[in-house]
Length: 530
Image 1 (cartoon, helix red, strand yellow):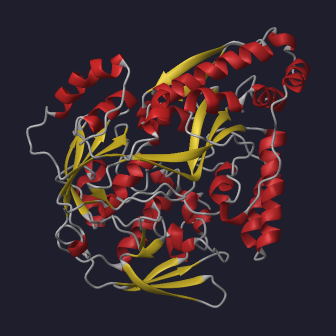
Image 2 (image 1 turned 90 degrees about the horizontal axis):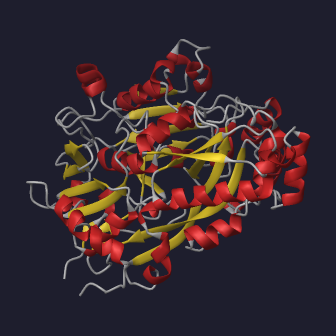
Image 3 (image 1 turned 30 degrees about the horizontal axis):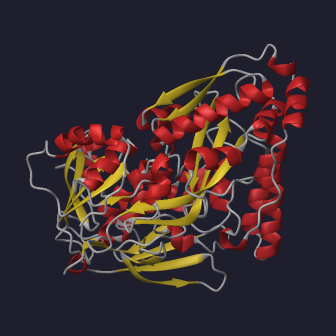
């Protein structure tokens, strides 16, 4: 029997609307229904920047490696590999039974094509830097090198891929499972152009194929009979529903219209205390940080004193205790402590007096003359309540007024990517267990920087860390870089570290496990047999 929880009347009032939406589709219910968050922005691995899109991509495509339920990289299209003594040369041996969903073989040349496409300047991949570990890849992506044959990836035959790195990279195998490095089929893209990810067009090599994508309704995945490991996939059909309202999500779950809630933003924070006692509530820490970005190309945030003043004025504990309420640790660094053994430097602590002093030094004593600025955030109760709290804090401490600007997921991503905001709420989930998955994104010109900030000394430190083989010396370099990022230049302000939350009944659904990367492969899900 489904456990009973005393929910606010508002939730029950919306229940019938949720049920109606859930029953509006004509096709039979999928084996497993997952609430994945907002409407996907894209399914193109080279373009994907969001976690919810990444989950779908991992179901549709298999990389050289893939993540298991513990977020560990395991063999996928590559059945084995050799690593040179200097740890800069990788030889991947591809399995001969890997097939695209049209039955054609997956070859090493598919990976070369996909990686070249992701690095091509015209693709404008914000995650192209995930391939910079390859020899000459950065120069090619920036347009300084035109000949891709000089980039460190080659197909020596159909089933052998040679990769040459610039420096030893301990987490390179993790990257080989990451979205941006997934293969795509050249023939499919050349035939369909920008329409290649649509149902009926998309050719995939993962556990599932794309049967339907109905905007604001659902994405339906169907088991791929050509998948090399199809025997291990018991789920025949899986629906991912684009629901961004925690209230609606909870109603779907309680009404049996959905089996799994994966997006942490779909858990009503006001009900956390009651929900966390239920057997379907599963939580665990993972490598994720909520923070603010400042647009340093616009006044008044082109002045680091203003950015520091805002950072020092925010009461982060008030946010985690009053708004999020799931035990999130307050953050004074962008890198979660303990990431691969790394300890970040002491960050900024709340200091209203110093905040007011810095704002006065910047020419706005008591907030006088401070222009109206807009705070961008994505739709949802938790982001909105956090925005309201921050708005109140800045008014109380600094005497400044900020306007709130809410946008739906796709528009929010576009606005942030184009740096067309004043300050904005932001999140980052580590792509692998290493500090530089957080620190690399603030390199000058990086597609994920999205602040307009850049600093040659910071860039040099990150480059030095990439070349440093000694772990402790490498971490010491990262500490210097992070201190500049958070406590001196302050283009970002950390707020709190994540706690991952999933809803599912373990008596019904298997294949889920809390892990540091908050990765939950859809291909691992299965119905528990009784």
